[in-house]
Image (cartoon, rainbow, N blue to C red; front, side):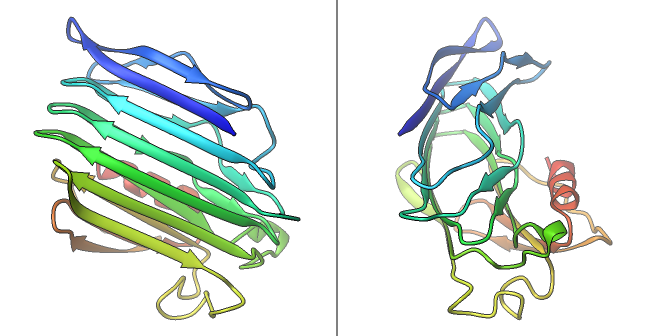
Length: 238
């Protein structure tokens, strides 16, 4: 199992990484200190996520700290000969804290198996944004829905009350994923959840987008033919 744990704190008006721990292949780059927040980039010293890999990621944002968490490159999920790969993410944002969690898009290779679970705990007057962008496969290599299984579950709790749940399970052998209700003839899909912020919703002629009010917060779902298009569109909303 590979772990990455970090804690962000507000010290004299600036967000600093007060604690960090990671094991190979995961690591973080030196923080980038912006005017209003600190940005941390996750890096991996491997070509992608391999069969049998297990990633355990934990992010804590203390009171009045402001953090943006990104990744160095797309998450490439390699072929699974045995059990596949797993990822577990636990996020806590305390009262007055702010986190923008924007990992790079996921590309599941042919015959890959991936299971990702994310649990988010928000408290008091916190703010939170997360994105989840998925490709149908390596489209440049004519791989479309050639993976075996992809699972992504996100649960968000506000003051310990469940306020948003997104449970996505895709198995190409069980459903026509390019059809209605799934990718709808597009090659990429994306989900953004926003809590404690008012996004500036705009139209984009390169993607389709729909907005849903959750119990608390807002969910924006998109479909397009480029992960970069969806990534840039999400960036305009925050």
